[in-house]
Length: 278
Ligand SMILES: NC(=O)c1ccc[n+]([C@@H]2O[C@H](COP(=O)([O-])OP(=O)(O)OC[C@H]3O[C@@H](n4cnc5c(N)ncnc54)[C@H](OP(=O)(O)O)[C@@H]3O)[C@@H](O)[C@H]2O)c1
Image (cartoon, rainbow, N blue to C red; front, top):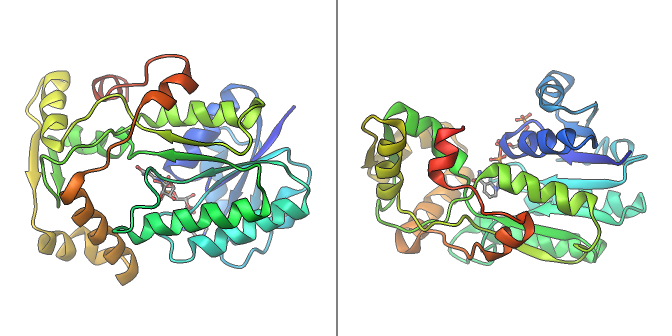
C-alpha cells in the first residue's frame, strides 16, 4: 500500500486531500503541529500522525521515514513559506523520495502579491532539491465562499465585478490523488482553474437561484476590513491580504480550465454544483 505524508493535513486543503487519498485506500500519514490537532487529521481519514515543527524542521526526518510520497502545502500567508519549503524538500531528498507534490497557487509569479511570489520562490527551492516535483497551481476555492453564501451575504473588500475562475476543492483533491499515485506527472506543473468566469456579483446571483433565497454581494471598504477581520491578523498577513485585494480589484484571478478538465477526465465542478452539494 502506498503511504503519503500530507503536510498541513488539518487545514481546509489538507483535509480534502487526506479524504480523497483515504477514499482510494491510500495510507495517509498526517504531519501535524500537535497530537490534539491530529484528531482532525484522523477524522479526515489519516491512519497515522507525525508531530512536525515546520518552522524548525524538527520531526521531519521521522515523519518521512518509510513514506512513498509527500504532499506539501504551506500554512496560509506564512512569512517563512520559502524556508518551510526548503526544509521539507531537503528532508525528502535525504529520505531518497522522488515523488513530491507541491500545492502552489494560480499565477505564483504575480508580482503584486507577495504571498504569490513566495510560492514561486518555494517552487524553485523545491525544484533545486527534487527536479521531479509535481506542482499544482489551484485558483481560489469555491469552498471559501460556501458558508458566506449560506448566510445570505458575500462580503468582500474588492470589486464585485472582478473576474474569477474559482475551482472546486474536491476537483483539486482528485488531481492530487492522481499525481500522487500514478506515474507520468513527474517534473510537471499544472494550473487548476474552474470552468466558469464569475464575479462576486455573479456568484451571489447563482447562489440566490440555487439556494432559493436572496444572497447579496456586498463590497466593504478595505478600512472596514482592516478594523474587522483584518484586526486579528499579524501585520505581515494583513499586508499580504491587502495586496491581494488590490490585485483582485485590478484583474481578479483567472486561469485556463483545460488542464483541470484533462486531468479529471470529466467536467470540473461548477459553483452551482458545489452549493447544491457542499
Ligand atoms: N484557500 C484557497 O482558496 C487556496 C487556493 C490556492 C492555494 N491555496 C494555498 O493552500 C495552502 C493551504 O491553504 P488552506 O486554505 O488549506 O489553509 P488552512 O485551512 O489555514 O490550513 C493551513 C494548514 O497549515 C497549518 N499551519 C498553520 N500555521 C502553521 C505553522 N506555523 N506551522 C505548521 N503548520 C501550520 C494548519 O495547522 P493547524 O490546523 O494546526 O492550524 C493547517 O493544517 C496555502 O498555502 C494557500 O496559499 C489556498
